Image (cartoon, rainbow, N blue to C red; front, side, top):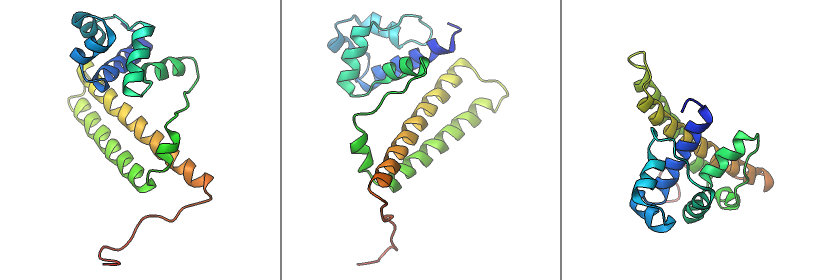
Amino acid sequence: MSDPFLYRIKAAQRDLIERCGGILRVEAISGFSKSQVGRWNSPADPDLMPIGAIRTLEADCGIALVTAVLAEANGRRLTDPEAERVQDVSVMLTHAELMRCAAELANGMAVAIADGQVTPTEAQTVDRLAAGLERAASDLRASLAGIKARGGEKAGLRVVGEGA
């Protein structure tokens, strides 16, 4: 597998399996064998999930991880039906999560390049951290879009002890 697209698909498959509860649970809900699910989960194995399994697993966890990668490969983006939920989340909370993910990514990348070489395992680890950062940035953008749509919002900051 030398195609970056395939690495993205395999990473999305692994994330999907993880979000659905791991190999054994995916085996139970997908109808595929443990060894087949293990091949989907392995970064070294070229096996890709069939569309039916992708649809079943994405519906189970509520996140279109593999479908989003397929859309991106064709220059498209998916809209998130959970956008209204995210808009209602505090912009402070989404910003804090974005900063946490950015720090984790910075640390993971620093560890990966510390010896002057990035191994495939290190690249996989950093890629997962980057995916978390993408999700956090998307949540923050959705929160900000909600604020814009509502015509602004008072920041939730206050002095500790205030009103006590």
